[in-house]
Length: 404
Ligand code: HGY
Ligand code: MN
Ligand code: MN
Ligand code: MN
Image (cartoon, rainbow, N blue to C red; front, side, top):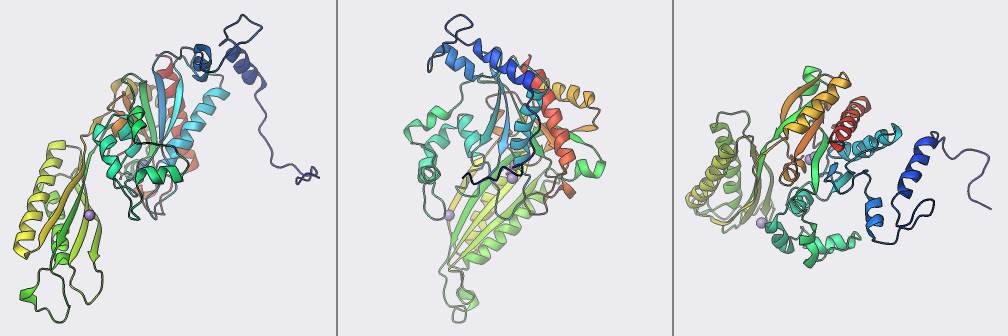
């Protein structure tokens, strides 16, 4: 017999919207090589391909939205996910409302927005946006188990070969607009009791990998004047990062040393190697570049002064900021007004896939409040009501843009 006992319902379903579903059948039937009521739609023929688009005019650049679901270690459940599940729900809301888009609507789930495994942030959106450096550089990328990106992708069931990676790059005009719904990852909206953030620009991130090498040795036997301690060089560099960021005098400059690894990592062995990873950002690109330059100079000075070797100073990425598109910002304002939601213009200090999609499409972002601005830690939280507000703003904005 069946494993399910028909006595009790599996779960209670919301009713199928018969009218809207019937309408979709009737619409899809129009993509046919033969006159109604017959339907002919052969694999990969023009009508087959057109039918796969959702808009009534699928030749036009689509309107896309999406975000990421990868999460850094010990972080929270909303960063990125709000923009993926929220995008799917926004499409469903439009479907349930019987909305017929002219431009197709697409939801994108980006690969590896976080730099955790391969050290490259926004790997998927960088590729989509046409980073030739990444198409070539990704071959050398291995994780800390020495697994290559390609092997990791294959083990997850994604067939990716080095040859066809450049086919990932989007043609210009593929998208008429790209929108991302995301938690603010900052405290302003909650503090000010504002429901929606309309993002005007995304800050410019840079990340640097540094390594120092010294002679190491016995923690008891090597006297202080004989030492060239790679660990202390790392510690001094971390403080130098803080100093160079504060020196700009701007609150928009930030710098973080989130990773310091000491080798051999024994209490009674002087570190012979240190590996430091630095994240620094600013809304002003020149000011950010000035910080990177000073960090480089400090690395050299510290190495010289401490008699250690600066065995690696690698700028992993040094990206420009991105401005959000005015047409999209206007559409967002129309949406929040229609929904009667409080809103404010603001910058994003976190980076997002939108930072790279802005290179190939007009881009916009919607922020919703998150608890005390917490993010990248388990206390990260956004209320389902705030998420629903974001979904409704996204749905109305997608609708407006898809009719442009
Ligand atoms: O670090 C960031 O800005 C993003 O949340 N990954
Ligand atoms: Mn994140
Ligand atoms: Mn994110
Ligand atoms: Mn290294």
